[in-house]
Figure 1: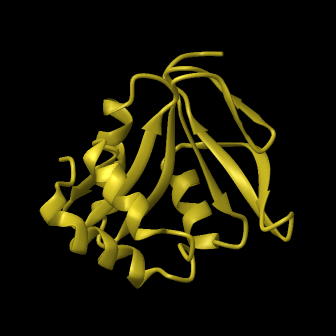
Figure 2: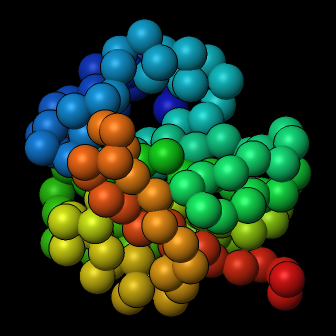
Length: 143
């Protein structure tokens, strides 16, 4: 389930395949996240995440301690159904609510999160406000 050091090239190659959406992914961060067991690699799907250790904000949304923040999800074979299956398993793994942000212009990803029964709950932006984004949640508990 968790990526290991020997999986680094596989993980990085998935992100290189999707450079348009993940230009910010850095190899040094991936290596650290692999060591921290914050990357899942399964059936060609990569999920990068962390469990919040304190309250934090993503855009205009408050995240609570114990919630999970999904940083990236990508597949080496889009459309295969693998991402849907792996993400469903990941939902079960998460101890609290799961939050993610995605570029608003990534229509494929936005449709995918809606299909995964995630709710659009907020807005964010990157690059000094020039790249708008959406924030989705999959709730484990009612708030």
